[in-house]
Image (cartoon, rainbow, N blue to C red; front, side, top):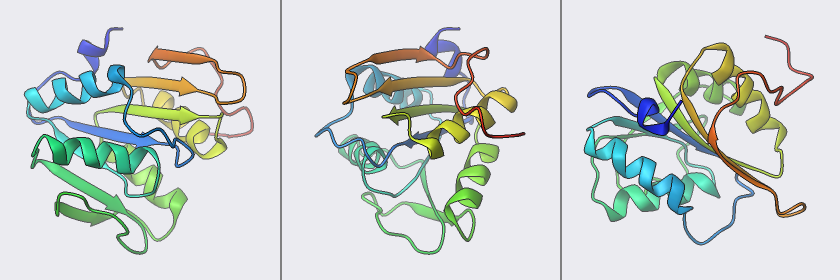
Length: 161
């Protein structure tokens, strides 16, 4: 699967999700290109509001003056760079993440240092067969993978469907 397959179709909803441990100053080029392609296709973009990757996603969307954005949160809204509409997707992290995943048609995920929260979300995206571009990186091993979610890989072995 190509990422071009992931972000196709007007009116579709793209989820931007990522680790709060992702502390780079800007998004990786591979990720920015895919977000820009989604904006060109006028996709509705759902994004979280935690520190790390979600702040960078929001900052990128704001820098492009993109308006078709929904900021998903749980108890309270902590960050909304573009003063976009927001939705309370749940009362806690697990509920919020699950509901945001259910609400999207495709996803872009930055997974840093094998975070277990993101690992569980990757499993859910697999089970729901949501096309997903994964940017998997580690500051410990310096490994990097950027490509489609592998349907055969087990991201979270302790999670049951």
